[in-house]
Length: 184
Ligand code: ITT
Image 1: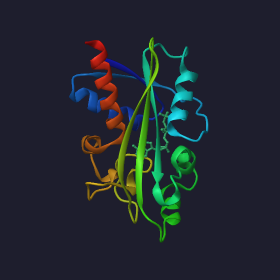
Image 2: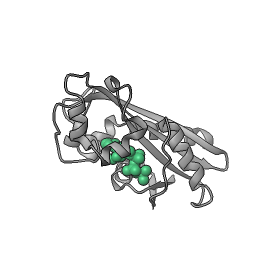
Image 3: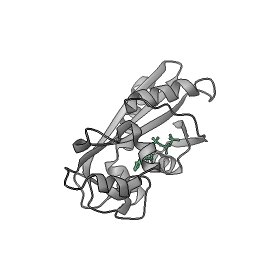
Image 4: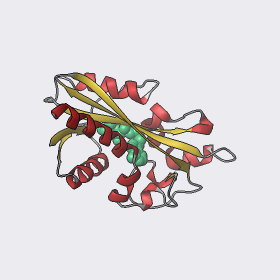
């Protein structure tokens, strides 16, 4: 199988293509920065991006939107994750969490655009926010996120290790299962 993935983010592409390669599948990278709306949910942002890209990228293709949801901040930054990462960043999140609960989750929503319309697949990773930044791999919030069944932050893991836990790969697995079922 060869899947076309639209993203400006090289880390996302590397994670997804590494997982697909292990299963004998290929990922074609459409490297493109597209306009993202601001909205209340990761689902609706992902859907709006899919609609925006329709007609601009050959079908079928997929994209994804990801957010970090912190329970004690009522889900913040969630759909504002890009803005928060590029403004206050990981150190700002750590400052906000002094004396607060650290439970959090990542949520990735893949939108797949094909002749059948737009279909969505959601992957979640539960965990907690670390006390300080740890590790130099990965990107974004990886240095401050520790998956529930791990003692390492995501930034202390190789791509293959991160892929064993990740929100992104959990969404991808659902997406692949759907494609395999529809090809039968
Ligand atoms: P696209 O071109 O695919 O939209 P992006 O980097 O803009 O790439 P998102 O809007 O989905 O991606 O990401 C929202 C924010 O969350 C952004 O600051 C990312 O760095 C961060 N992020 C996304 N996935 C992550 C992951 O697996 N680990 C850590 N941070 C992540």
